[in-house]
Image (tube, rainbow, N blue to C red):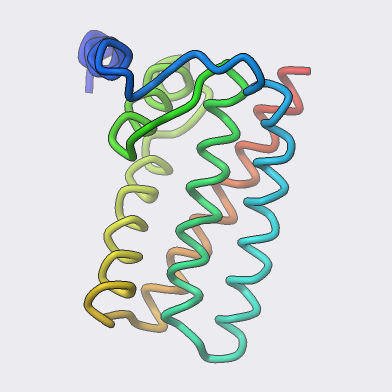
Length: 149
């Protein structure tokens, strides 16, 4: 996806109020990252206990909160999953700070979470893959935020 499309998606989200400036955001980024770490730990425990449905759901939220921490670090707050992705692409992927495969993994994780939550469809393999990507995204978000200090 080209830079122009990412900018266009972000502009559309901003104009619709789905991404907003948020004065307290930067101060909240570390707390949001802690929430992501806590969710990932809980997801790993659920996985170890054989609760693959909950591991999937909790793993998605670990990724969501890691992505939200990144957006907060830029002084913004999201109001939709689509716009969270648009902002991540514009602020981090387009600048070479985050690999697009992690954003694709977040989109896949959202689908897996919805399937687990609403359709009661989940698997051990899906949960494991999601948790591996959640750990990778969380690690990368942590690095980005540490380097921004």
